[in-house]
Image (cartoon, rainbow, N blue to C red; front, side, top):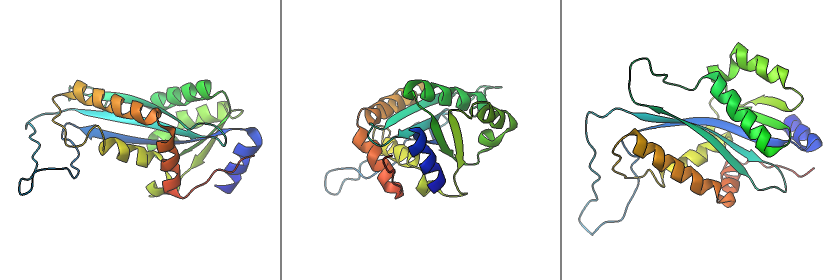
Length: 201
C-alpha cells in the first residue's frame, strides 16, 4: 500500500477502509459475570427470521479525528426482499463520505462482486479526480480496521442480548456504532490492530 499512502499524502486525501457485516437475531455470546456455580443463560426464541446487514467506512487522515460512516439494511425474510447491498448502496455511501470529509478519498476494500462489477468500476473511473480505489489482498481481514469495529459492536451492545425482532436489532446496532463514532480513540485502536500506519505529509 506504499504507493497509495504516497497518493494520500500528496493530495491530502483520506484513507477510507470499507467492509460489510451481518447479524441475525441470535446474539453473539461473550464471557459474562455470574454467581459462582451458576452459568449465566440468555434465552432466545426459536423459529425467528431476520437479519441486519451493515456496510461501514472507517476514515483516517493524519492530524484529523478518524471518522466512521455506515449504512444498514433490514431483512425480514419476505419474498422478493433484497438480501444484500446493491452496488448503488456502496456508491451512495462513498459519495456521502466524500461530501462530509471534503477531500479526495483513497478507498481500500476487498474483491466482493459488488465492488468489482462493471457499474462500480465505471463509477470509480468517472470520479478519478477524487476517488482512488485500492484492492486488499484475498483473505486478509487482519488488514482491515473495519473488522475490529464489528468486533467492538458484537462484544458490546449486541452481546448476550435477548433480541425481540429486526427493529430491536437495528436499534442496538445504531446505538453501538454511534458509541464508536463518538470515541475516536477506538477507531485509532482499530487501525493500530492491523499494524498499518499513516504518515503525515
